[in-house]
Amino acid sequence: MENLSIHDPPPQPGGIPLGSPMPPGLGSAAPPPQPQQLPPQMFTTAAQLLDLTDKKLLVCLRDGRKLTGILRSWDQFANLVLQSTIERVFAITSDPSDPQPKGFYGDQNHGIFLVRGENVLLLGEIDLDKDDDPPPGFERADFNVVDKLAKEQKAVEKAKESVKLKKLATLGFEGEHMGEIVL
Image (cartoon, helix red, strand yellow):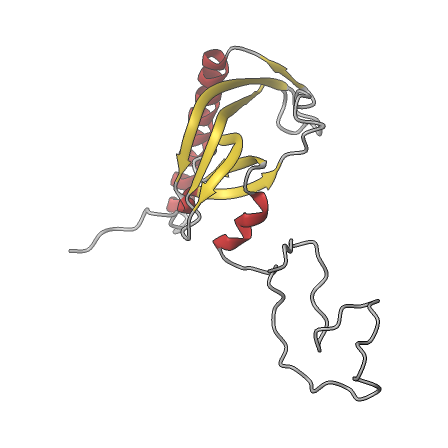
């Protein structure tokens, strides 16, 4: 079995790779056309994680947490087992309209971490050459201090959103999960 990755070109119809010599005995007769198939490296399921196994990943969760760790295992539901997991929290101290945000970040070690697949919003491989560089515009600080700042910022945003939803409700609009329950 071939060891293919997502970056390999798809196999050519007829099974003869590009640039390889024509096998003897085939002459100029064209092989019968085969039905079009997706190349084996073009998985659209959790099997796509095969290329990312044993690599360092950034995983963004639905609740806003950002985890980095080494992908050790996964299953058909895209549940992930991360080793040497670190949770990174950001607190922005600059004006949100600034093109380059400034603030603080803090890291919390979690060790081995199991992530349920339905909670994964985004994941990607980390460039190991840039892994040790701090995020541009952010300074490292104690995790508890940064976490407290981040929670305060979320509370302020939630209050603003609540006010906005109330104003929209006076105009006849309904926000998510705001409808009446009829029994």
